[in-house]
Image (cartoon, rainbow, N blue to C red; front, side, top):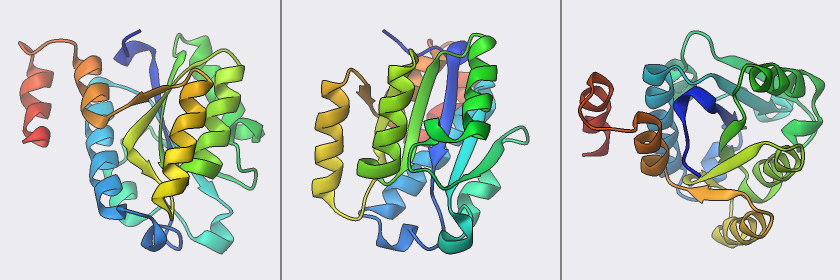
Length: 184
């Protein structure tokens, strides 16, 4: 199954000030999340940002905040799984009711909040795509374990380029011309 921009919803999980300095390959994760945000903005994909206990871990890092589309929604949570937070569930359900049944998930930490969110949203019947080069943890071993578990559960393990190019669908468009330089 391919991603479709008209059916997708991008969720950015917990890219927060006190957490990001400890994240394995954090700069690469940030770069790819910003590419996903540019593609989402250009192609009209709704964006939801989660923040795990922002009083303790800080808010979303400024480079992500600055790249968010105007309609993006940021929601705080204390549950590890975003699928257990009533506000986030309401947001996902509302978008799902409008035909957005594909969740594209990126962020941190792969083996905790990303994993739990992906598994529970998958169980609720959504198509879940976890962006391999836009998720990480403090340890690469945790990322590898999360990948194996997510694949076993039927989630799709994709890359930033896979997401953007599937959302675009073809090359002979203004969207492609605008986004292609991000991959050079």
